[in-house]
Image 1 (cartoon, rainbow, N blue to C red):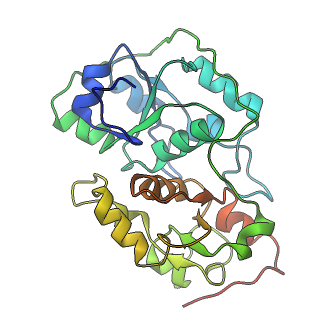
Image 2 (cartoon, rainbow, N blue to C red):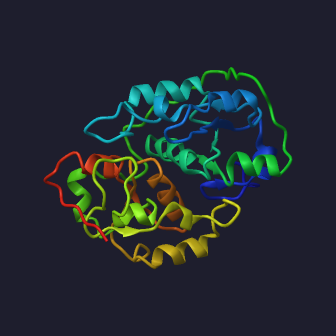
Length: 275
């Protein structure tokens, strides 16, 4: 993006408003277990934003790889081209879930080689609160030219690598991490040795990301700032990207474990810890 914009993976509503027409905007509104966000998109969206369905475009079919495994590369690339994503044009993703779904789009695009992807800090709520223009109806973006790169730009780990990570961050709510409740997956608990930094710890009381120094302090509290290897997981690999994004803001490079807890518990021989 142009030099007059802040560096890093986040962009403010005012910065995005000034950049409209020079960036591709993706609306990734999503509610876990709820209806797709296409209706919300039609009712109002950032001008020019293309709707991207998390379940259809940003994940593969659920199975032994988890509830939201990484999508097939050709399918993902096709979805991004339909949304207007170009290799030479910055991308901004937003949602109404405090960045959790948008972070998945950010991570996938960066992982597959796009050089400039941001998440709208505060998402749809922040855009409206800032008083910026809202567009309604369907969007028909000009098709893009995005193709996945054979060289991946973000680290990822598979299930066989999980226990070898120096600091393994669990992004779920504390009660799910401790195994006191498990509303989605068939087994409660966490990967042995994991530490808990819930996605809510990345945000202030307005749903914006904390400043880099405060995020670094939060992740230093679990040793991520000084570890040789760091990875994040969650229930299905979606919200863990929020922790990866927060660490990126803080200057800490972390891998994503896409299969996350929903893949981990498909094999009863894998160890589980509670408390």
